[in-house]
Length: 287
Image (cartoon, rainbow, N blue to C red; front, side, top):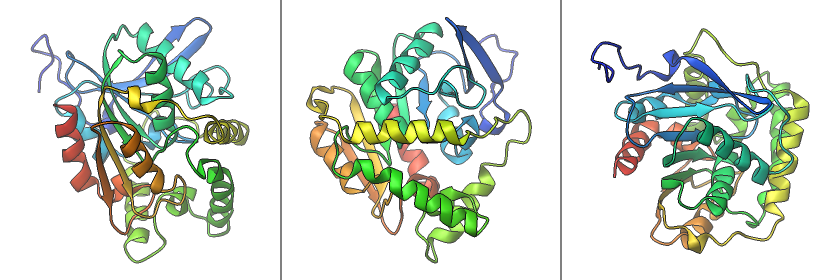
């Protein structure tokens, strides 16, 4: 595929997407973009403790085939400077700051887990910014048991440390005959990019993000009935991090939303079922 000028090839592989940076005020935001330019971009909002290197290429690449895709490091994480925000509302303000600096007046959002919480806070403040919304493995502000993410996360980090595994193998996937191979395959795919990788999040930043999720979980709910965006919600039927029932809750609160629950899967169901979910998400975002 060639670029708008007819010569420059369009990169549609996330593993090859160039890392870029933009200074906004005193903060430098790191981001990667790929796919054909023009039209409404799809901005990816990443999960707890994640950097740019935590997006599954099997999810990003099918969307970037026909859309301008942008993923970014939040403040104080990966290659972005500044301090990790104490609340997800602040994180939403930072996302808006970056999106505005890049000159985007309308976007679609693909969000996973904590990214979905930040995306909701962004839309509450800027309802006209977002056209279409994909919320995966996430839940609403004030959702039941949302604040239990903290205990589950620390427990699974411990379990992973004792078995010399990646915590995402425990947090994202069922520990059974289908979940374990799916987890290993997912972790391998995250290593497909070999150059220009981010530094992992440090423990202080992780703790700050966990506290922000806890506050989000214990806050008064946002009025999601005001959302007018076409919304696709997806999760597994056994999400231990952000309980699956919260995806049902989101579906009830956001009028006209679509809900997909995958069987025998957990928080990372969209990665376990990437071959089924990526085409659905790409088609939905093309609507």
